[in-house]
Image (cartoon, rainbow, N blue to C red):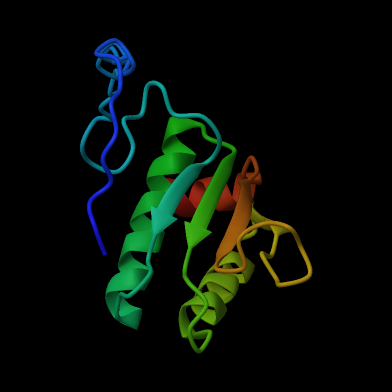
Amino acid sequence: MGLLKGKQKSNFFVFAKKAPPRMVLKMPKGKHSGKNQKGPKSIYIRKMRYEEAYRLLDREIQAAFLKGETLVEVVHGIGEGVLKRMTDDYIREHSFLKILEDGGLHLGNNPGSTLVEIMGPSSEDLQKYLK
């Protein structure tokens, strides 16, 4: 192989202008900022042991209930279904909770999450929680 030889005019190459720097939006650290959050509150119990996931779910659902939130998304993951069954059992135990979307594979949403509606409690439930 040999070298290619040729003569080119000096203004043959045109250099592009330097591109302006891109703006980078930084999201606040931590799981939800709260004020600018859109959509339902998410409770992440993925990769947790059964007992600690149950305690976190109970604490977060009661906190959402006291704040007056109506929708909560519980992210339990797919796995073997232990946390999903625990979430379903927890929702069935409380009359003021209702499953809106199960997150099964036939739906277009995340199969590892369950969308829960928090309804207003009955007078019996209210008395039970106020004791």
